[in-house]
Image 1 (tube, protein in one colour):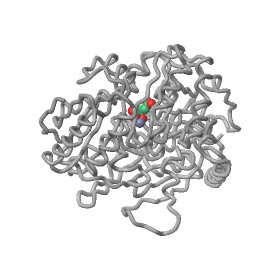
Image 2 (tube, helix red, strand yellow):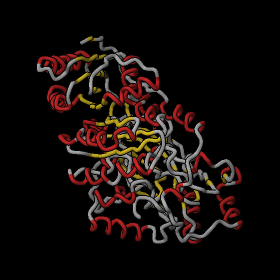
Image 3 (cartoon, helix red, strand yellow):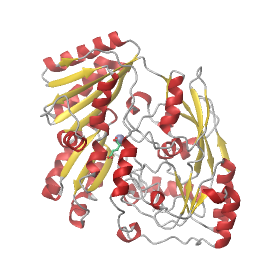
Image 4 (cartoon, helix red, strand yellow):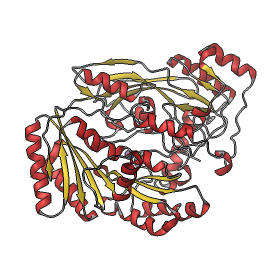
Amino acid sequence: MKKMSATGLLKLRPNVVKSFFRTYKASGIPELTQVRHNVKRGNYATLEGKDIAFFESIVGKNHLVQDDLQGYNVDFMRSVRGSSQLVLRPSSTQEVSAILKYCNERKLAVCPQGGNTGLVGGSVPVCDEIVLSLARLDKILHIDEITGIAACEAGCILENLDLKARELGLVVPLDLGAKSSCHIGGNVSTNAGGLRVLRYGNLHGSVLGVEAVLANGDVLDLMSDFKKDNTGYHLKHLFIGSEGTLGVVTKVSMLCAPQSQAQHVAFLGLSSFDDVLKTFRDSRQFLGEILSSCELIDANSLDASVNHFKLNSPIEGYPFYMLIETSGSNAEHDMEKFNRFLENGMEKGQIIDGTITGEVGKMQEIWKLRELVPVALIEDGFCFKYDISLPLREFYHIVEVMQERVGNLATRVCGYGHLGDSNLHLNICCQEFTQEIYKCIEPFVYEYTSQVKGSISAEHGIGFLKKNYLKYSKSPAAISKMRELKQLLDPNSILNPYKVLN
Ligand SMILES: O=C(O)CC[C@@H](O)C(=O)O
Ligand SMILES: [Zn+2]
């Protein structure tokens, strides 16, 4: 085990999303979503000249986009493509409200869009919905260094808010590979998870308030600066994770955490999944509250990021790798704890090899091995992506079962993800989409997840791609109540149609 000095404080990460977008633009667009998924257009009005004139009077000529809409119509994964003819870029809640009120009266369907970094086709139109881009609502409203409360508009880029918070010794309690492009409003609407849910919990906990515009244009001001507010139903939760189907989030307030004073990252090689589980258990025991991330990367996943991005992995040749990060307040104490944890793991033969560092540059190098996995995997051609919560004891079994099932129809079957949150990313890559491989995978993957009482979406949401499978994670009674809520808040179903519910 090579031990490095602990000097690093804060981690700045590579611009994963921007590099991905370059690849995506170069590689063409997929076949029409409606054809592949057999979608029937809803009973919505079609755009007329009078609509364009109205929208122009609201957002102005320059923010009504009718040309070159591919970046708005195609999703991050290149698997869903809509045929919207119009993008509106409002600059205020009032403009969003006027647009929705009009669309509701005219029965024009609307697809709200943030940074368009979602992985389930939730942020792009499926047919010809009007795209409502929140990109111009990008202001940071305030960050209070005493209380840690930050408020911003929905289109604020996560990284921008985080950098501003860091100037005040704070950190936004959400960290994703897509942070340089994704919007806070999109993060909240999808209840985005990411790399530090283990530390900060999910957005249902850290979001204090939201402002949302309903389908009929009503503005619901649920902004709050308080953690404690027991005044009846907490309506804000309806907009966290409902993927733009119940309202459009326009503002958010959240509680930022104090920035940690010391960070360390270890990258470990293990020879069995049983050892992975024991090492996770020990990490909780030995590292306690300073444990901030616990990620799993299997050999196929590591191979993808190393080879595609020509990275150097400090250790090689193991079936499993763990990335364990601590964030604490005293580098020396944290390092002592980490060393005890590592020594224990090595003595028991659970950890075979590894490296640990507190240097910023070296921590970044290690994080790249993990964060670039999903981007590298897309390069094989087509990638079936699953984002499932599984009981930890069952966590890796499905990867092995899937390897057996798809055999050489796949170029790679990979399991990686947020082990500390029981959230597996199962990715099955192949040269191109074929019915043969598709049928091997679905609905089996959902049936399996349901049988072990997992969740078919741990963090990416249901969006368009998983809406037919919601029943594997929600009872008929729960789905029926979801429909009633949708009907109550959006009776004409103009908001993000074809998503979440059938
Ligand atoms: O692409 C994926 O399957 C996972 C993406 C993201 O949630 C991650 O954890 O890297
Ligand atoms: Zn993830």
